Image (tube, rainbow, N blue to C red; front, side):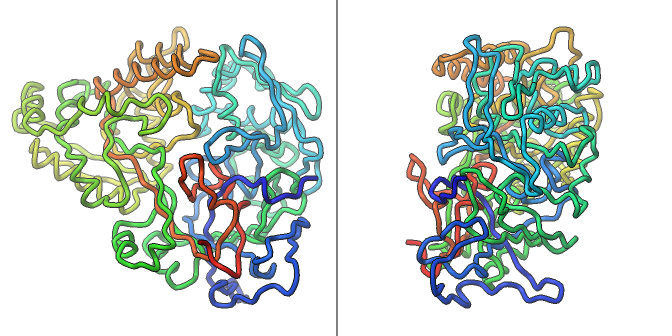
Length: 593
């Protein structure tokens, strides 16, 4: 069994500890930092670095919002933190540059035609209850993902797995899905066409315990039962106090390449507006670092003015785009000139230099700077700020000075303060430059996604206009563009076309489909993605507003491989899904340099 913390990838976790029922919260290391009297060995038998605090102080605390579900297979939009490190484990893990590395899948190969992938599993891998993890668990996992009510089914459809759509619709039984077990430690994935980026998606193949869940159509509540607290990852859920916290402990059955160093991770349920104060009070070890939990603008202003806090700040540009989208299948946004008017009425520079200072850069494309296939410079002028042109286009569309334009609501999804500020600024600009009144309505994740899906399914409704972020899932030119389309199924209804939005362009889909099937020619693939994105931006399927700069505060006594820079020299605080973070840190008696 491998027991080396040097192999750790990266991970995100900052845990808050308020007093537990009848028991005091663990003291912050800065408040009590005795050096361990001898080597610190955790429950996996790993010896921590010489400056590690005693094992009882190897507790990492960070805040989050309480959600409905526990696990990734239940929901990707309404699951609690810990869904990636405290329940499943993934086939592969990304390194600091997002390149796939062996994990549960120790090796893999692909056939010459690119349509059959073979994965070989770690042979000593077990669940935390001692039950062996086998290839059948991965087969069951994909069968579970292939269900119509799963909010991330669209993502896995990008893998092109044989019979995927037919299993999702119920036309074929799950056994017909193109994921098969060869033996206990080998499984295959057969696709309808070559998918060169499939191995990158396997970083999100979060294996589900078949012996616990049993029913692939389970409603997701299986993980709420204490008897089902079972994990294949580096941590396992110890306790759940509803409305208060989750406590994860190191999984002593874990044998993978990313073993934990800290003994506990505590996720405190806390509203965003009080997290910064809790961090300053020593109740948290980290705060921020995500598009839903980032530090608000007011906190950033204070941090930048405080030399001590500024030393604890980690900032990095993330592959994320905040954008406006429209229902282009219905009035008034079925008129290209209306969409163009909106795109020219918004001063992005004013937003990122004002209410979003330190948190964003202006966006003119879906693919952010540095992302494969991006064409930021080539497309920057297509939707440039030009209020006079915006007024002219709106008049040509039949709404001079905004007259006769229908009442408009801009929806947001669980907006944090920065996104709320951006929405308010956009609404003000639309009023100033187009004389349009826009109401802002914030929805919870579930309501928002239900409305989004219903609008496309019914091809009509009230969900016409919204502001939302999309963060990358894997680093490939296909990923962020796939939100808008992909390979079409012959004879499919408009509502069944690939992508999540009410926008359709056949040429765009053809380009994405061609690029997504090219093997061993990344340059040509990226050329095709650039052609596709030009269609997307010129047809104003969206109005990109800003790309996020993520900010996190991390106490100086938190150390570990997480803080080693990537190939670009960047230190990040990406969450576990992208970094294996919680396995990459420990509590130290000294401070980071």
